[in-house]
Image (tube, rainbow, N blue to C red; front, side, top):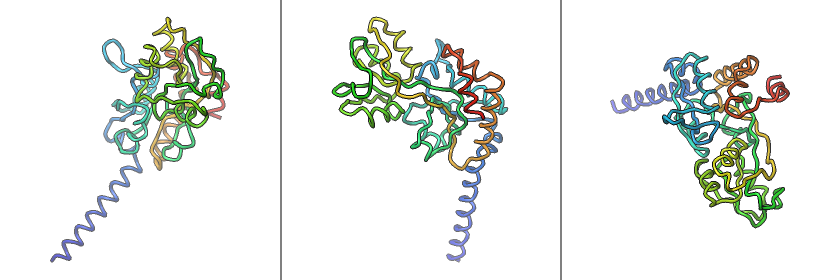
Length: 266
């Protein structure tokens, strides 16, 4: 009788395991069945993600998530995140996808899949006008503030020899450090740097040099081919109809260059 019970338990565990694998492998069906998509969005990275005066989410990444959910025919659930928790939220099943200034990197591409890029992001080093910095080499002996686990963190850690990289847990912390004078140099996105310039005109902040121009993609779990294919088709269609460009222009004050879009969707 004991052996029979053990056999039944083994069969049950096998069935549960198979069900879990099937659920993971078919996230698109799960989303449609739940009539809801959970999207990881950082709401402290203006103008890509932020909250308005009524503490409601807004920003270009949020609007992209709203449009995607609408076209998929499901409700949107925002899973708030910071830079360091975007991918863990996806891997642990807390979120279905990531739309959160997620730049493509070889390291990230090993653990998640990326969609066709939906927007560009200029990554730069900026700081107080009086500091003479024009390249990575000029950062030796200086401190640079970054958001932890971002591409700016990676680029500066690997290439700014002799610099001290000061890491904050989110972009709100980086903004506060720069605006209040705790940090005189920062590695961040162009959009976020413009927010700092506007918040602290007395600091006379200026761009020092460009780190890279990133392609921002929608993050999807590995081995989710149907969901990734649907998102890729959706991104291409909304580049073609101009809706992604409209969102980008609304929040970033410029259009996505046509040659960049052509490179992405060819």
